[in-house]
Image (cartoon, rainbow, N blue to C red; front, side):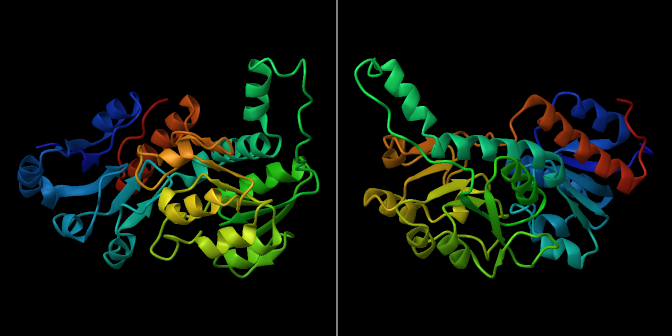
Length: 310
C-alpha cells in the first residue's frame, strides 16, 4: 500500500504538473464514464484526502463519498463548479488560482478596453479595405479621463484598476464590501453603471451574480457605454445584451466568456461593435503553468506531501 496521500485528479493540467502529482501523491484519475467513476470512488473514496479539479462538478453527493477529504484545489479562478458552502461545513479547504492569474487577466482587460474605445479592429479593417486613400477615419474615445467601473474588486479587479490608473482613467467600483482604496465606491452595479462609461465585469459567478448585468444595468450604461466581460458568461444576461445592442443601446462590448461556450449567438458574430475572444483572458503559457503549479502546491502544503523540485 502506498504511503503517499491519496488524491482524486479531476482536471486536465499542464504537462509538467501531472508527473508532479504522481510523484507526491497516490493519484486516482476520475474517469469520464459514469459507471467507471462510481466504481473508482467506491474502491478508493474513503482514502482520498484531496481533489485536483478544473471544471468537473464537485457537488455534495461527490463530497459525501470522500469522508477523509481535506482540500479541494481548483486550477481555475472560478469555483462555481464546487459546492463551496457544503465543503466548508465539512471543514474542507477550497483553494483557487485567482491570485495567480489576476495580472494576466488584467492585461487582457486593458487590451480590450483600449481596442474598444480606440476602435482598433474597425480601423484595421478600414485600412485593409483600401479606404484610407480617400476617406478620413472618425475620431475615437480616450481612456484618459474616462470613468471606468469595475464590478467586483478582488485580485483581478484591483489589478485592472492599477493599469487603468497608468492610462489616466477614473476608476470606480462596486462589490459586496467597500475596500480600503481611494476609488469611489458604489453600493450596487446599477449605481455603478449609471456613473461610468465602461463597465468591466470581474466578479465570480455565484447564485447572487448570475444575470447580474441585466437590462436595467445595460440601459443605465447607455448608448455611449461599453461592456467588458472577462469573468463568466452567465453573469451577463445574454438575451438582454443582444436586445440592447439591437437598438444601438451600447457603443460596444468585449466578451471573452459566453453563456453556452463555445457557442456564440449569431447576432454577436456579425456585430462590428463587439470584440469576441475564446475565453483566453488567462491564456498565456506562463500563466497557465503558474496556475497548475499553485494548485499542486496547495495540495502538497495541505497534505504534507513531498514538494516538487522545479
